[in-house]
Amino acid sequence: MTALATRPPAALQPTHDPAPVEKAVVEGTAADFEPETFLWINFRRPDGGTRIRYAWTTGGDTLGDHIDQLAMAAGLDAADWLHIGDRHQQTHTRGRVEIWAYPLRPVLADVQRDVRSPEERREGLRCLLVKASEVTGQQPGALTVRWLGFGPALTSRKD
Image (tube, rainbow, N blue to C red; front, side):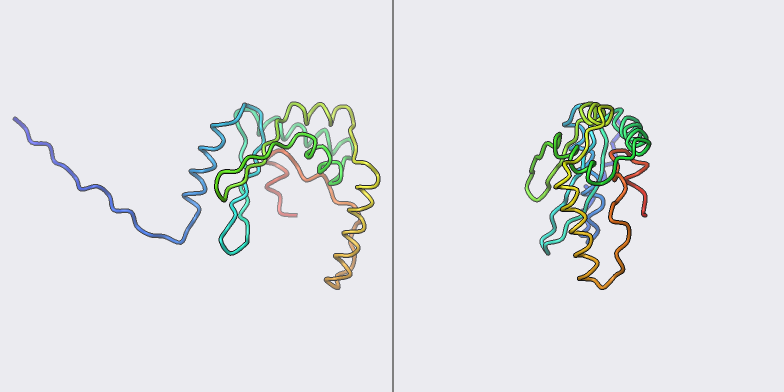
């Protein structure tokens, strides 16, 4: 009879790095949603801040990039992105984690139909940009902001 060597269970080490836990939460969360969905996941911190992670369910990354290409070719901007996103956003909360889920097929349909932001919302965003430049003392840049993205190619850009 052979004795099996047993190893004591691994001790958990405290860490101040939330990344491994957040990664596990993101992966588990994505498993709960339908294919072709973009997930914007907000981790609310005790200090009042928020850490944001993005995830895509099966096929969502490719479809999101396709939507972004069509939207940018059509000249859609941030106001349109907000408007279309608001039309399809589904909000879920799990403790201090808030998930904004965007099923991408309806988003694609809006982009293909050239759905645009109402002019009053667009003007409100312009006023916000002007006020922000006044408050910060910065020169106002362009009074429109590019389409923000539903796919990884645009959401990962740093500009």
